[in-house]
Length: 384
Ligand SMILES: Cc1cc2nc3c(=O)[nH]c(=O)nc-3n(C[C@H](O)[C@H](O)[C@H](O)COP(=O)(O)OP(=O)(O)OC[C@H]3O[C@@H](n4cnc5c(N)ncnc54)[C@H](O)[C@@H]3O)c2cc1C
Ligand SMILES: *[C@@H]1O[C@H](CO)[C@@H](O)[C@H](O)[C@H]1NC(C)=O
Ligand SMILES: *[C@@H]1O[C@H](CO)[C@@H](O)[C@H](O)[C@H]1NC(C)=O
Ligand SMILES: *[C@@H]1O[C@H](CO)[C@@H](O)[C@H](O)[C@H]1NC(C)=O
Ligand SMILES: *[C@@H]1O[C@H](CO)[C@@H](O)[C@H](O)[C@H]1NC(C)=O
Ligand SMILES: *[C@@H]1O[C@H](CO)[C@@H](O)[C@H](O)[C@H]1NC(C)=O
Image 1 (cartoon, rainbow, N blue to C red):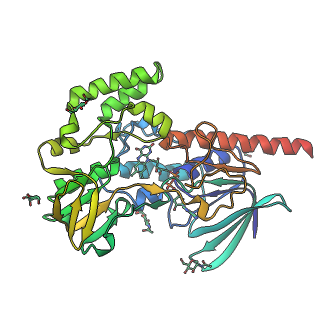
Image 2 (image 1 turned 135 degrees about the vertical axis):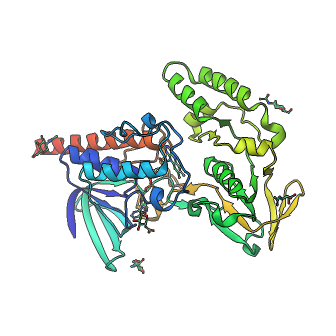
Image 3 (image 1 turned 45 degrees about the vertical axis):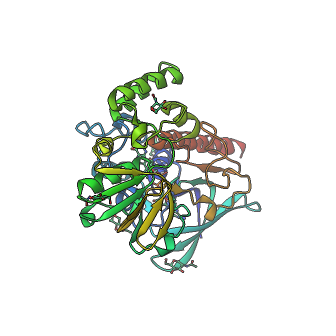
């Protein structure tokens, strides 16, 4: 059994940023991570050609800018390098192979009790802490939607987090389900690798370029979101035209309004639209059912596939381990309160990395949480 001021659960960017901020304030903290390395989402569960979708100035963790020569849109490998440097710079010391099974507030001692499976040694460990920071992420595990007949599919089924590159799909018929950034980019990557690629686009989406997003982000500091959306959508129309004849509809509300209110990001095109327009990538509506290798779609179209890639998003797994008596989180494992009031609960419980605002939100959370903990510790010193 170990007693500390703060336990942080998860060594992704959110946990690392929080630990760095606490270390700067000389507040002792222990970070528990179930995998064998930090940032496992980036190291082990993302595709090779991934780059940060936002320009680097929006993706920095606290107190450490990217090196001078880093490209504006940071490639995965360089982002991983940045995170590894972050760990050594701020003397962060995650404990690996620690899978947290439960964390509950012990009223009698006024502390959080965290029970851990040390999967390396095969033993149980427990930690007691005044403060608990949940940093297991919005992307806890891959989500697969219910699909008629999926069990009968004879080909390969993977989630986007298991997709590395398209090498083994050359000449194969591959269906990508899901039209978020991952789905659109994986479809592009598959097509480039010589796979005969289709993509299911079910809901309406905004497709922008990274340059247009950049303009929007800069503008949104100065003008109302409605104006930003007007300009952004005008520029997008100039760039891509009306995509509805290719099976891509725009939502009624603008992309920045949606990001702010619902947290969904627009699609940032990496070249997929050009391939859709040229017919290299086929756009299809929802799947109605699957039988063996044959998949039927809502428009009646039927095609034989070798593989399906589900790029259908993730779900948070906090409620699998957290005894959340005061309901910081809703049933979906996301905070009930929205930004900027989402990060703090009672009894010293916090969450970092659940604001649907990517690395910018993570930076915000880490600084607010560490300052709040520092404030509480100083208060209690004074009361002694
Ligand atoms: C493909 C992809 C691209 C993205 N691109 C961008 C981008 O360009 N810009 C941007 O701002 N944001 C981006 N994001 C969003 C966000 O910034 C990242 O998801 C980021 O990694 C989130 O960090 P995190 O620390 O909150 O969660 P994670 O990186 O998921 O880290 C959580 C950690 O908790 C660990 N863990 C989980 N459960 C337990 C447990 N029970 N016990 C112990 N450890 C546990 C996990 O192993 C993991 O290491 C992207 C996300 C994805 C999926
Ligand atoms: C943290 O500790 C170091 C070394 O003891 C000290 O120099 C520094 O001022 C401390 N920082 C804070 C914020 O207390
Ligand atoms: C994840 O990737 C890192 C870096 O490549 C590696 O050190 C680590 O062993 C991998 N972990 C797993 C579980 O594959
Ligand atoms: C702990 O983890 C190991 C390795 O993943 C697993 O085999 C074991 O069942 C786990 N123990 C408990 C008590 O959950
Ligand atoms: C891809 O699939 C479509 C639809 O089945 C088919 O018409 C086309 O010939 C295929 N293209 C290649 C290169 O195999
Ligand atoms: C695109 O075209 C469709 C059908 O022709 C039309 O209904 C829709 O309003 C157009 N969208 C825009 C943004 O002009």
